[in-house]
Image (cartoon, rainbow, N blue to C red; front, side, top):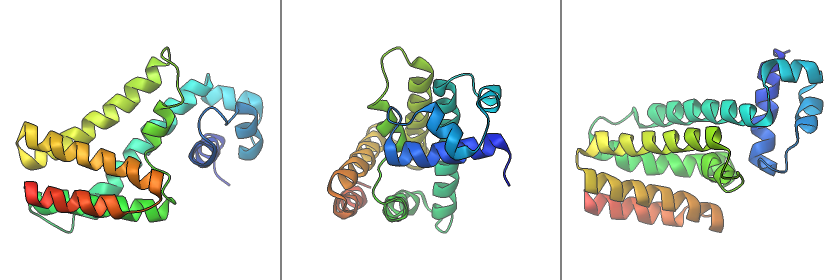
Length: 174
């Protein structure tokens, strides 16, 4: 059986994914992770600290999966176009749940700055990914915005249609 910290993070990932941040309580996490309350608080001082760890873990997972997915292609244009294919695969894998970072952003209050900072860092890293491939600030920003909006639209409509369209637009832009 996994260590308590790992069980807590696994359960949190599932619950935040299916229920959201606000609808998931610490007591539910403790119960489903099969840990003692003291054990939970030994690893995480608060639900906010748990969310920060969840988002950091999600960030590392998401970028590792993206890098693995696009590693088949070498040139920057193909890496960018393949990143849209990655969204399609993730949508199918995660049932069009959308971006974990934006989902949590919509649930946090203005004073939850630790969580906001993690979300902002994730989006900065994604912007940097496109900028590193394109080497053109305006064009890379445009592609980033297409990428981000297609994540949201695919979640709204439970469809990859707009990801495909964004990919076609991106191909023409590059």
